[in-house]
Length: 430
Image (cartoon, rainbow, N blue to C red; front, side, top):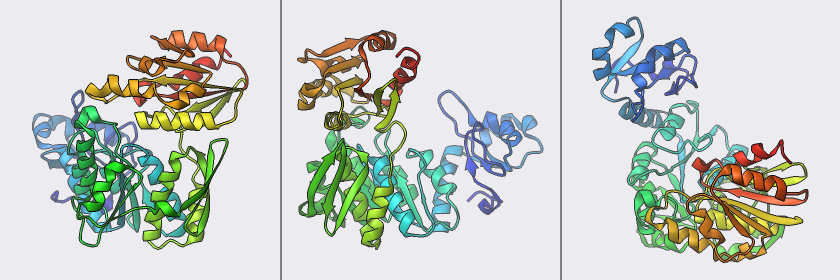
């Protein structure tokens, strides 16, 4: 507890003065290249009602902080977590936690889409606020009458999921899959599995885990002693596809997805199972799944001069590239083209994982493959229609001459590559 601090007096909590909350509490975070304590005066100018301040900083900067409502703490970062734990206990919503190598955000938003149409007072992670800063902020800024809270749990290093679970303590947890994302940070798929399973570290006896049974790595979760369940693979029938959109039968219902990609069937099954467990009826299950329309830069279609770009450049993993290519080739177009950048955070597996992608059968169906980055060129090995570029400028110049109306172009790479820039660069040249 922080002496004298009453969380109910604030309109919210913020850590960035570029995104202030009027009447909110400012919490300073210290990073490698910045000290949030130095922004405390700015936070008050932007509307903060009060702020935490680290004792070591306050000791040396008292003169600059006079007249401000401050609460001294040892660490802003630790206080962010502690306050989130307190608010979680005070509000006491039913918490659905979601993690996995791919599909976290989509599954989270599918769960939210179903629950908000079937339940009262549902809140969820905004965007991908899924790390050791974003998750506690989501908890701290949820409405105080929240009954159901859907939280995405991400990973940047070993131990992150355990930390996040200690803050959120989910009542129901979903694991989408175990892939090669973050191997550089964690070490191996086996270690990734252990990391993801730690979302259940703070389970009470009545809490439940739902896993993707189609992922062989997750079969162990069903034998781990946890109360684990999974979608029934035998209940999934009559899968149909039109222009990359899928419909299917599951148990007693017919579903039509409003987002492209066969992989989204698996994401939707997890969301359906979670909502069923919470008592949502069949009608609301169907309505909620079909209401979900996707997110920006996640297979979002943009048309420029008669050329359809599929902007899927929010992030990438080997599995999501494979899924993206499968969806691309299922769509109708005069020419199918892929622009692929590096998949990052693969560590010592970077060379082998990119080379494995070159064996995907979907590549054979493409009219052109363009790659950019240190490793992405390996994806095109053995494919005559592939060409590698060393700069975005060179790639852009080639595309401006190569692309023509009727083309369908997939853009896919890890987030820091910012490969979506190619669309804006081409707008004035096509």
